Amino acid sequence: MNYNETIGANIRFERRKRGLTIDEFAKVINMAPGFVGLIERGQRGTSMSNIVKIADFFDITLDQLIRTDIETKTKKTENAKPLTKADKDRKALYSMIGLLSDSKIRILTANAKALNKYMTEDAPAADDDEEIID
Image 1 (cartoon, rainbow, N blue to C red):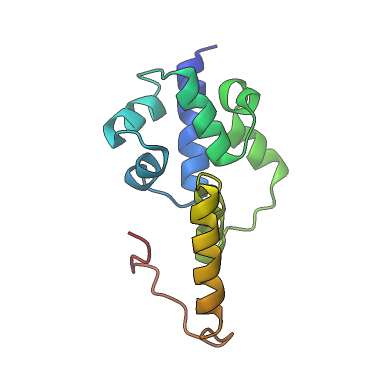
Image 2: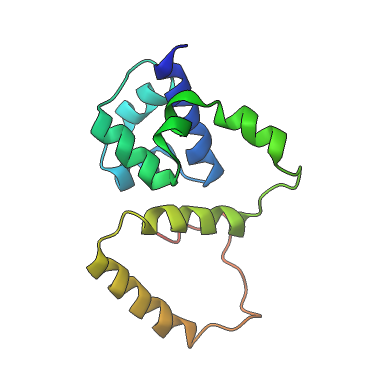
């Protein structure tokens, strides 16, 4: 088993599942995008601390990240129903929130509560091409 290829394929699958670009993902986990690309292609390994950080970000076990073909396993167990843009955005938010400090979580929560007062159920959805978070 080539662990670098398995890890890389799993990282790419999990990142894409959440609708993140390499640049967005690299920024969140504090790695260079080019290095993330090398890891995803199985051309480079990375430190154990980076692997732990990545597994934590995706909320998967180290065993899943290192030894499991997540994409194949997922295809066998998932419905054929495709994810909506909102589903992908939601998953990306969950993943990003997991890396925030307690103080940033409190700030984000306070801002979300304040924004919620001005949002209505029939508010138009953001354009799919529109960049919402920098």
